[in-house]
Length: 438
Image 1 (spheres, one colour):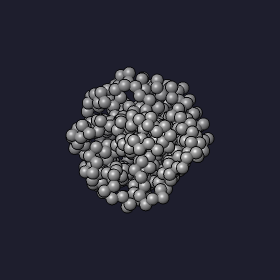
Image 2 (cartoon, one colour):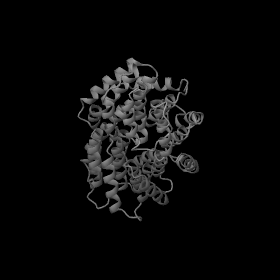
Image 3 (cartoon, rainbow, N blue to C red):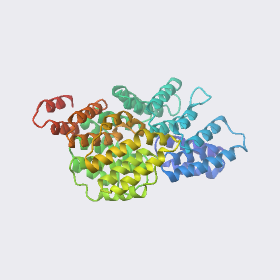
Image 4 (cartoon, helix red, strand yellow):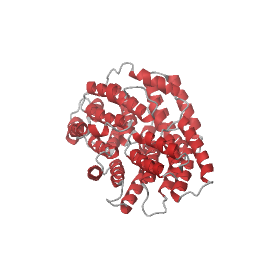
C-alpha cells in the first residue's frame, strides 16, 4: 500500500467532510499513486450514489462489483470490508441499510468518512431519527481531540434543528464552528435556525459575514445562496431574490439534483408571489422533460414535476407520474418512498394545478413528507403549494389545518399572513394574531 496514496486519501476524507471542491482532485491523485486502494474506489462509488441519478447509480454498481472482486484477492482491513459491503447496499438502492452498515464499526469510535457518508445517505433517505441517533451516539464516543470532531458537531446541530430543537441546534452549530470554522454543514444548520425562526435580518447579515468561508465550498455554495435568497424572499425583496438566482444560485445549467431543486423551488415560490420569472422556468422545464424517466430520487422527480406544471406541460407531468409508478414497484428504499408519499403527492399537485381539485388526502400528506428526504426548508415548497391550492379552492378549514402544521416547523411568515388574509378578508383577528407570532 502506497503511503503517499493513503495520506492523499486522508486529505480527501477531510475535503469530503468539508464539502470542498478539492475532493475529486485528491481522490483521483490517490488512485494514480495506488490504483488498487479499496477505500478510494469505495468513496468514488458513494459519490456516484449521492448524485441521486440513474446514470451515476449504475456506475456505482459497476464500481461495487469490481471492488468486491478485487478485495477478495487481498488482505482487506475491517474498514475496507465495511465500506465495500455498505457500497454494495447503497448502489442497490438500500440507503438506510448502507448507513446501518457504515455505522456498525467494531471500534468504539466510528471513523469520520463512515460517519459523514451515513449522515448523507440518511439525509437523502429522509431518515431523521437515524441521523439524530447516529450523531448523538458519535458524540458520546468522540472527544475534542479527535480529528473531525467539529464535523460531527455540525451534523448533530443540523438534525437538532430538523427535530425542532432550534436553541440547541444554534448552540451546537456555533460550537461546531468554533472547532471547524469552515464547516459548511454547520453553517448550513445555523442558516436553517435563522430561517425557521423568522430571524431574517440577522440571518442575512450572518450569511454575508461568513460568505468568504462558504463561497469556497463545492456546489453547496449554491445552496447557501439559496438560503440567503429565502430570507430575502420572506422580507418581500423579490428583485434581490432574482439577482441572487441569476448570479449565485443557478448561474449556469447543472445536472446536480441539488442545484436543480434550489432553482425550481425558488422560482415556484416567486410565482406564488406573483413575480414574472421570465424564461427561467422554460429552461428548467426542458431539463425536467429530459429526466422524466429518471426516478432514482423521488425528491428530485417531484421538483421536476413542479417545473413541468409551471410550464404547462401536462403530458410531461403525467409521464413523470407514470414513471413514479414504475419506481414504486421497486424493492429499493425509493420504491417505498414513491408508494408512500411520492405518487400521492404528485397526483395531488397535478389534479389541484390542472382542475383545482382538492381532496381530503391533502391533510394526510403532510405527516409523510419527511420520507422524501432533504430538509424542512426544502420540503416547504410542497407544503406551501398544498396550502395555496387549498386557499384557492376556498377550502378554509383545510388550508388552516395545513398552516397550523407548517407553524409547528417554522414561525409564521409573510406567506402565512397572505394566506390568512385571503381566507379571512374581512377579519383583522387573524392578521393581528399572525403578526404577533411572527
